[in-house]
Amino acid sequence: MRKRIVEAGESTRRHAERLATERFSVTLKPARTGAPRPLSDIQAELGSLVGLGSVKEQVRTLLAYLQVASRRRTHGLTEVAISQHLVFLGNPGTGKTTVARLLAEAYGAMGLLKRGHLVEVDRAGLVGQYVGHTAAKTNRVVKQALDGVLFIDEAYALAPSNVVGHDFGAEAIETLLKRMEDHRDRLVVITAGYPKLMNGFLNSNPGLRSRFSRELEFVDYSTEELVAITERMAANGEFQLGVGSHDALVLVLESMIRDERFGNARVSRSLFEHAINSQALRLTATNDVHLLDSRSVSILEAVDFIDAAKRIAAQHRKRAT
Image 1: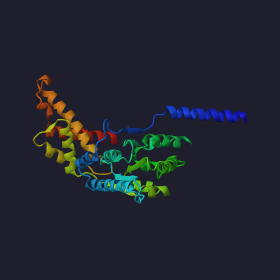
Image 2: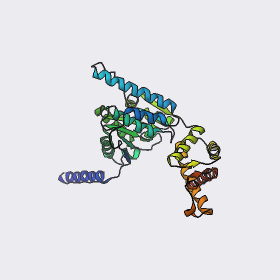
Image 3: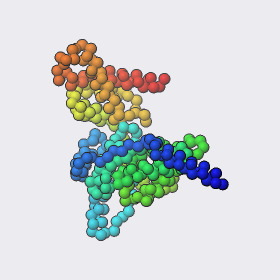
């Protein structure tokens, strides 16, 4: 008996050591340094985002409700309990993380959350590989997110439909639900993922639907919106589009297959970055780099975006083989 007790103690010690040294799949996006921004500035940034018309309207409605609810509490009036936890439905690259960050900051500006930071995590950051591991990982992430927003990307992976054998995702969900109740005044949880798969996630546990009563749908960007996003990235990087570049972008983006794997704004980012590389190759092939003026190194021509699209297509073909 004494031997078994010693062995159990040793196992517990090794388990604690693993937890202390393990790298977690967690991204902490701290609140901005310096004085917090006023709510009006945060709302202005939200309004400046390309597209997302329905999402912007729902966020404005949510923030308006929270402001009025705060005033009601100040006057000692009855508070109607409404869950602040959210579900973001949408394909990759549709702005879900950006909006989550702005919401976290807005909650901080309004005094609803002390820090207003965002902790981004996925299944790997919550689910362990053996009994007792998952609860510890989930609790650690929740502790990091207290007084801010916990953003769980691809949350449907916590409740896979085709799993064979035991899966610890359910344990992560149970632990999360308990911590959401324990810290209901200090934690907002946002889950995100593909619309169809998120429905399965919400149905996997009876407590999820009641906790996440508000859903925001992030629709795919139109071609015009993706062009605007790419052009904004170029402007922010102090690049200009040459003659015909706008039309080239439209043709390139319209030719891409739009399915669930389409990256939306991530495609715009990829096009922009590859176009910069194409520009560099074009300029250095026929010019002495030391003689290039500021205008030459600032213009992205139509051919740069066409070459960028070819590079991206070649990468996709390589991955498919």
